[in-house]
Amino acid sequence: MTNLLSLTAELVDISSVSFEEANLVAYIETELRAVSGLAVDRIGDNLVARTELGRDYRLVLGGHTDTVPGDSSGSRIDGDTLWGLGAADMKGGLAVMLELARTVPKPAVDVTWVFYPREEVAIAHNGLRELFTKAPDLLVADVAILGEPTGGAIEAGCQGTMRFEVTLVGARAHTARPWMGCNAVHRLGPLLTAVAAYEHREPVLEGCRYREALQVVHVEGGVAGNVVPDQAMIRVNYRYAPDQTGIEAETHVREMLAPYLEDGDEVALVDHSPAAWPGMSHPLLQRLAAGSGLEVRGKLGWTDVAFFSEHGVPAVNLGPGEPTLAHTAGERVERASLESCYEVLHSLLINGV
Image (cartoon, rainbow, N blue to C red; front, side, top):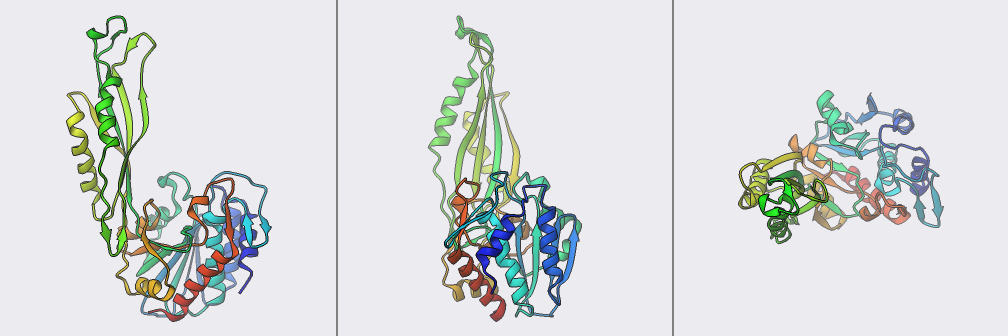
């Protein structure tokens, strides 16, 4: 096995901020085309490599090639720790995938390796979304594992996320005569109190606990220092568990907000990324959990596993590195985390179900 810490450092040293992934993709493409038996397709900056061994199951192993903007000085290895932009999110995961592709040429399951760009920006630009639109046949599979940093745990499925803009209206007046108007900002008070007191659910699905949340994340209002404001707006974020559909989740939020609304007020759904069912009942994922002994938990955030779930493919997150270090100035990954993740996935590819 190649030194995974050094391989990750090589990938960190190839800058790949969102929309600038071409050099990293070219490097990975060269490596994959050198692997005997892999059919490699490149669509834009999406890279897909497939085995065609006629196995009973097909597994997608995928990860995004981009990073957020940050310190571009490159990697630094200190003992068994690698520091650098993207080390945890998710060039450590990419290094594990690349090494597995090179060292397990004839796995017990057919494998589709997917390296895709633009995950760290708006979902409209997401490379995986582009692939599902332009070349969905390349992504047909029974199970998907994405290498997002999970600290070595299996994070199954993901919660959905919605953002709403709630606009309350009032009547403008001079602050010397406020009784002649209606202060829209003051009207926010009961609504903010209700959201702060929201009682969240914690459903357990296939042994995975999810924790829902409703939060106000933005407030706007006010005209001038001597004007009673006639409009105020808040943005509300709702994280919902995968036992709800998007329609059910939206209806729930609208019903919760309804008692605080009056004629002329508006509630607009401005962004939605659907949830993904955990899918741990699939034999391959059961084998992964049983064979590895890793903790299995629900993914509270949203990840690209949702794209696969939308197409009926059970998907989980499993990758080296601590998710809490992603996008931070102290981003790093440990050798032990890389090697542990490699061994778990290597065992799955060698043994199958």
